[in-house]
Image (spheres, rainbow, N blue to C red):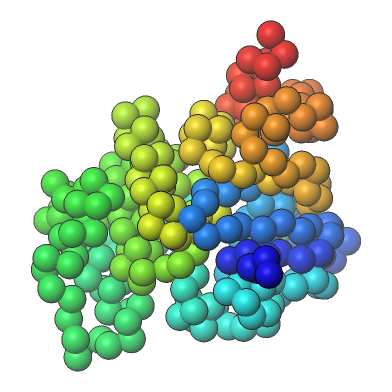
Length: 263
Ligand SMILES: Nc1ncnc2c1ncn2[C@@H]1O[C@H](COP(=O)(O)OP(=O)(O)OP(=O)(O)O)[C@@H](O)[C@H]1O
């Protein structure tokens, strides 16, 4: 009998007044795989993340996670069931050290504030895992943006999630950091975690994802492997069409991958 995917988004619609932000979108994210969710600015990616994590109720459709429908389950219960999320904006406590931020996240996730403290080795192990141990004693608001993004990931991992929802996790990272980050994502997936990532860095998306879903005007216009997505004419049109519009990060980042194929 085929097993159900870790996460399924099924025929989800989200309307904000007259704006249809998500338009009958269906896609899955599997355990042990890195799944990319890409699309031009305003395509509905963040709204999908909000529906999946529980910040936004779908107008219609449903979300299934680990075999249960969670469309109306509160955020904290989804988190408890194994859903972890990082945000585009940084959420860490600026006046605390990097180490204490992870310690607090650990306490919050385990719901044992003040009763069972994680050991320093547990916390430092997470910092080492994401490659920011050297910043352990720095205030969170003093570290570079790329490091702050990795701190978000460490805080998320403190909850030992089965599914990680990562919203533009590599922004602010330089090329070396992004390469290391890609390897970390592969390692996390190899442990059996599912990763669903919204990301504008197409080199990272194409090198690290097992599967990619492309949104445009709220609709899923393509799903497939990086190679399939690269050569999909509908995807190329969605991005090439965006060239006529004001400059945004999507266009410059995506076009090289598309042109590579065209050439
Ligand atoms: N709370 C809201 N109220 C009204 N419209 C909204 C709201 N949130 C999002 N939208 C609209 O829904 C559409 C999808 O937005 P969303 O932020 O999900 O796109 P996105 O793909 O994440 O974009 P970006 O890549 O720029 O972050 C856009 O037209 C946006 O203006």
